[in-house]
Length: 573
Image 1 (cartoon, rainbow, N blue to C red):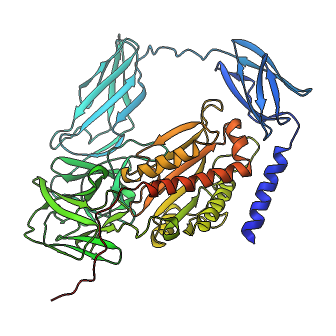
Image 2 (cartoon, rainbow, N blue to C red):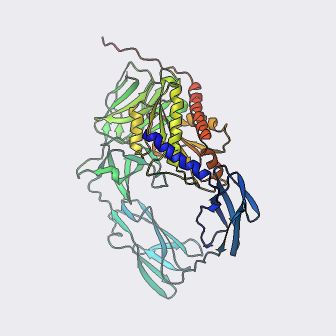
Image 3 (cartoon, rainbow, N blue to C red):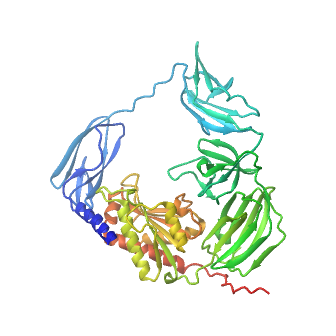
């Protein structure tokens, strides 16, 4: 009953807002600006038009509108008019202040890369970029020159760390000379040299993951994959909050330091010979088990075209002389290649052209790849579908111009999708069963422990121009999940929506799991009044969720036949 009352309240407010007839501007308009074009959002008499600067814009059925103000230097009076109502004002546009050239012996905009807080070793390269007076002479680190790269006062320099380097034992100082004047300027920089006496070894904490590099955006750095707890890592540096780890002689990766416990000195760099293997089918999974003497780091890749999962184990050398195989179904072949002296590659070829799910984790010191069987039937009535309503109170997500929250819309859509799936006999897991926010790890746990075959996360998009950024998009992380995302998108595109695209390698937490096929659906843009007017319509939302289900059914109906056979009970002799 609590859920029903919540939805009634949320969408009752939605309906009342949509009926509003008064003209108003929702965007915050400042008195002055430097830009030439401003997009303005507001509310007004629904199903009419609003006029500004001689141009008409639609006011949609939701009462929401978007218009554009084009500005020239100086005062720009404006009037928005709709159905006899008007709002007037004025915006003054001015040129951005010119950046005055530097003429004195000073450095500005100093940028040290890869970071200003580092643990480095011999051979690491540290770069510096700054701005100063044109034709200045600049040195750092005891006389190393920083060179001009243009005539506007941009300077760059590089420094390669030497063995037993003393350059960073004292504060880093720039020496700047401009004509007859000179100055010294201390740089905010904390660089320490890594001792070679004993390696730094750490072990992973729960939820640890490896990144390819130091780049980052709103989704974080690009992940390689997650690692089991207790994996030993050879740490060879640090940049800000990221440890640099040496996976093999020729391979490095990065890991957030919050996911690593530094072990006491005296630990060796982790290495191992591989021991015996086994491939055994049991309880709906094939288990590929590789014996090692300690927990080494690993990376996982998949090749859906070859129905192959590959695991590179770093620090491992092959000493496997037999592989015990019995009662397996999904696995076709297992093989190994010593691709580097200290990297052992495991190839797991599958009988099924579709990868249905897998996990790679340690049990003791054995690395176990757990490969999920193809479902006995690809009809919804025999499957478990996890439905995720994006966001949740108090993390409301995006918002329409009229004030409706993404979390309320996604919850309503998830409930309708659940209803449709259950009408077809599917078992449904709601990963956000109430209006309250659910932690990402908890959402994944509910899907994993509930035995989800497919996971669909429902969101609404926002951002960019209210005129250009609109439409539906689907997102996947792993190639074996791509076709489902394509089928769902194509199904929704039969509605009156724009195609915002199918986005791969999406670094979103809920797209990371490999235990089940998963897709993120960004339904429409709440920042676009055109899109918003559609998604605020209950019938439109319901049809969109029905089309998501149709997309799932299309995917299931077109999965190629499998050579995998259900294993027979194993009888020992």
